[in-house]
Length: 293
Image 1 (spheres, rainbow, N blue to C red):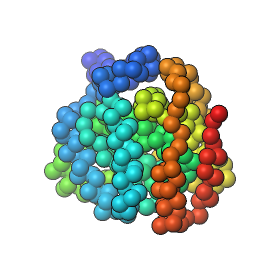
Image 2: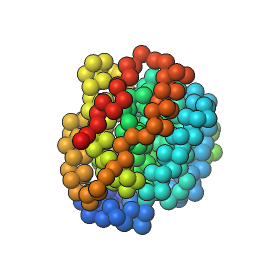
Image 3: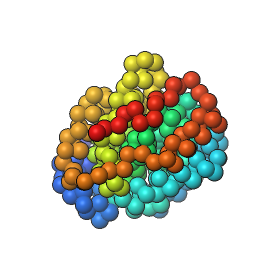
Image 4: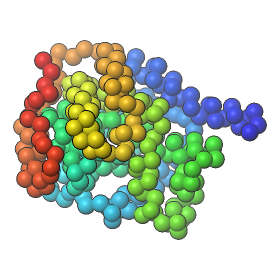
């Protein structure tokens, strides 16, 4: 590898590192910041077009929850977070009927949440925390930036498939590509960045930022009781104990608020409805069982 290529690759990894050091200083500027800086071979319109095609393929493979009450609630909750984020394109939220404890973000703002993850949460703020993390990935355009990095370094066949454009994706079989992309795992650097952005969006939307820590601890508890219960995607994130420590530091840097939203009656109704419509083996944590004073 020549010197120019080495410098280009190094430059591709700098913006997110700079964000980690600077963005906590200006959460009041959310909405006017550029958090998607970095090497990216996709325009926003190309990323959105790719995401749309991948969304179609996901929906061919997964069972989407089509209950209007649940879907409308999750969408409305998500759009409130979007309005308090740095994302620059429309974002869509859909629920997958699954016992898994997972969520993932496709290029262009297509966010999928397992019903099992919603059931694991104890209040609306925890659900918002999970969604805000995924929104951080969308706002920073992690999927196409990760693919661009891998293409630049000449590793991995999946990013090359994506970057071959939509015709190439269709020719090689989008259905076979969707799930590997979702579970390939973004770099730890990008996961750390999404945690940072997520807690800021949670705070900006008026939710208790400690809810993210509560959710991490709930996931950690499930994994201890039932090894393998947490999805491979979450296991590819930085270790949960490490994430909790970093999350606490991120929270400490946020401006204080006199009060936060923790829970709503609508959340309780929707969560109960999920259990009624889609029973599963995961034991429901008591409502409000992880409430901070």
